[in-house]
Image (cartoon, rainbow, N blue to C red; front, top):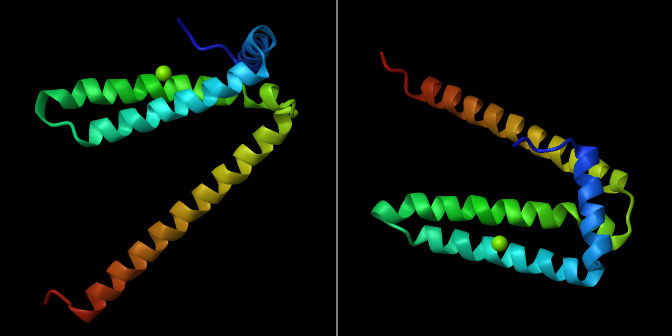
Length: 119
Ligand SMILES: [Mg+2]
């Protein structure tokens, strides 16, 4: 099974909100995010053979949370564009932060090499 395109996903999310109502679906957002938090906390305590099932549990709960979060524009009655633009903005900020951090790391390694040359 393939995940549908963004337009189809939002049609499905809207259908869920229309069917079960905004209040119930907002409760689901809270519930699924809480389940994800719980799965992460539990996985952090896992050891040995428990690690793989704990990671699988995180993935399941993350997908549940993502699907509920995807319904938020429809729950709030906000145009999807607002979420898309905010997503792009935060994505770009993260990209810039990573590039800056990599440059700082390279610069500090270069300085360390200058201070203590190997030969
Ligand atoms: Mg769940």
